[in-house]
Length: 317
Image 1 (cartoon, rainbow, N blue to C red):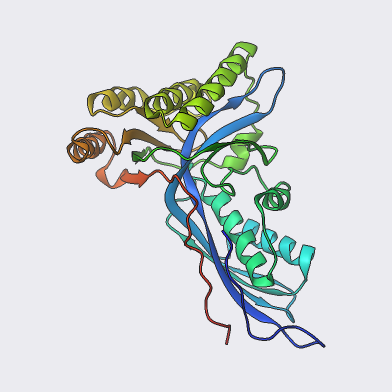
Image 2: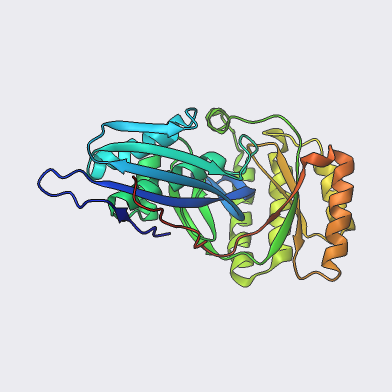
């Protein structure tokens, strides 16, 4: 996204500069695939972008030093904002974060916060913030999902580096449930995974299948990969409803299940073009509500394109 910049005064001759910019970043419902590559290759994941966003509003003041952030708990976002300022122009300001991504559930809420922050601060400064630069800024802060790139990507989350851009996903609805609790993604990524050579070979094969499936829009193959990855991840972050959700997917006409590999969410993948879509969706929601409390069931829409929801507010008064 390329947010526009509003300035109150162009800074020349010591004239203060003020600007407000707003940007956003989408979340991802868990991961279509997460594992590690052969021969001690990197850990990686494949994103499933969803139409839920984190939004960052940054009010820039060239005469200030440091950044105030709201909510105050978003300390990593403050670090990103300060890093962008230090790299380009200095100054400070206030950062406000909001959005519709639940925290600690495996929907990339933290990654989306940080990406949206980097974009908003850059927009306020009037500089470009391409994905590669976002990676550089986030690499020293925490393992990160690849939500700085549009579409589905294979991403080295520990190294914060793009592995491959895969393309747009076919339209799907995810009927997601929250099994409860939360997972600290940073702590989870510190745990040794001890993948065997055989597991690494399988993850490489699944990644190849994912490239082909996304490229051809083969939603059934995407579902098969996601389901297999969810089952392989059971020893690392167990989902108590995985067996029931896998069976339920077949019963309601889904193509499989997708899991938050380091979170508490798991969901059914239902293609939007399946026959009797509305009826199947209603049945899936009802049946999921029998596995957990009904308020823990939510629907998400896959996102097959980069959103254009960036906007710029009026000058800071």
